[in-house]
Length: 128
Image 1 (cartoon, one colour):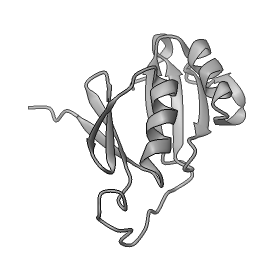
Image 2 (cartoon, one colour):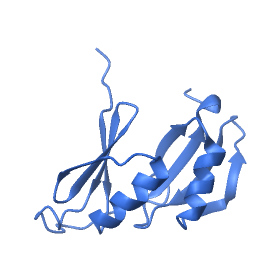
Image 3 (tube, one colour):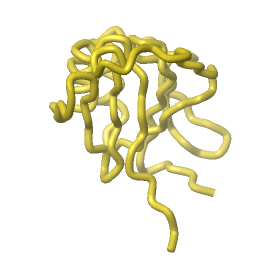
Image 4 (cartoon, one colour):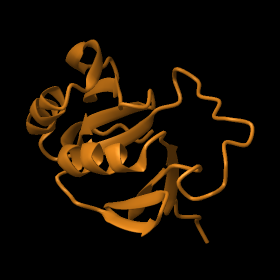
């Protein structure tokens, strides 16, 4: 049996801000599942925005992000999503939409919490 990725936890500092940001960016209201978790179904994999303090879990050791630790999303309308991202003051990196040497058309950026995320034109996905 092949394992199937079904959920990714994305740390956020304010669950209400995360809900609003991702609802507009992903064009989906998602669903609040606890005081500190808001889930968005991304084609069968759940993006779980998680505010540990709102859930009563405390900060623990804190989050340790790496600048290249991206969550990648495949989207049908990259240009439309980029326009929505710009309206949200999304921090786009590297000047916006680019085409990579391996053929993917994409853009990198950060959400309001500094999480690195990337959106890729679904027609250009490179999967190995």
